[in-house]
Length: 546
Image 1 (cartoon, rainbow, N blue to C red):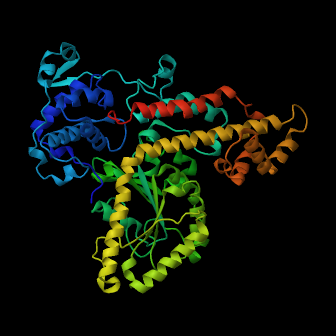
Image 2: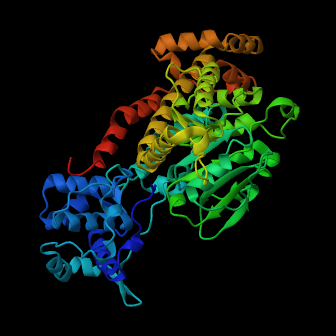
Image 3: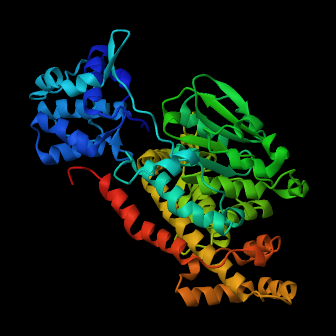
């Protein structure tokens, strides 16, 4: 089972040239994206029914970005061609068809006439090495200060959900965050690379639970920096992602690259950056997902050895960025050490991302496996404070054959089904990446709003002249009471409030008197964004045939 779409190489070069010509024709602004409105004009020439075209768009835009790049456009054209031949459309149709390279382009009624007679189209073309290409317009950087002063692109001007979120963040949410220093208390200010980053999966667990082997099993190859052994071999954080060649990039270099979402990791200091690296290699799976391999969590006597950086702080930082967190255990390492408890506690607020993997399960027989599973659930129940039962995948995630002597035929069948379920979960990550980005954005906006209410309330409680120091100490000491007052005054859900202890610790380094008073216009701007702008954005980039 693969986690990738049909590659462009499954289309012949001759057909690629035809599709490129069609793509350039419909992509009038030359930004490399075709929106729903543009696509419907071209797709209508296929004479397929509306339900069929709805299915074509849903499969081609599987990531729900609201637009089609060239790869997705080719996928759509191939689907239209198959539908015209009478095939029933499904997401597995392209993978199951072995003759994709020989599949003829679809019949598009009147398209040739449009290509030959559209004078306006020809004026926008340039001749480059004998190939016709569209002259792209100068790009608008949504993160450029100069461009923000001169032009503010409207929601109808952006060509994707992600670009719309960037624009909303810069215009409405970021000013609120900076005014009340939300980035110091909760999450760092977002950059363009944060919005454009691929989905990430982080693997956590004690040493020798199979984290590195799990990644190798999915990639079906080794990667730079991968070390496997019974002792703690992975002593650093390794981000495994796609790149033009195989190489390892040191942490200090990654932290200054604006095109990667790791610049904020500099706050953990040089001691951490020396234990951080990026492993790049060309791989179709890594074009869609990045993996974060972490050092083994310490247990027993090893816990007494202090790390040279804030380990749980780094885990918490990555947890906020990742789309899925895999906690790996093996049958012989079910105990949850003190450091592991701190690590799991640092995942608070991201419980929906957590999946548990009981790895190397073929090392015990079926009866022992039942006992191990029960013991694991009991241990997790003590540290995961959630009413729901966490999903546990049982299996042996490596390239070796399952030990049938230990688990028997029923155990082997169980492992295969569990592996398929986990792969299905991973397959859905790129498809749900845009939805999760919106979810995290909305969650961040609500957190920033509550933060501003708390800060402005503390500012209001400060005296005008005398006794500022004593009042600040009293407010910090009774911060839980302050939270209750803010909650009641503005009718806010208690579950959305930050940790009192963490807030108290950060607040102690500031003078409350230096904070701003409540600015209703900023709050209203965020409320309008949540109630109107984001729903409108999603409406603009939904399936055009809905």
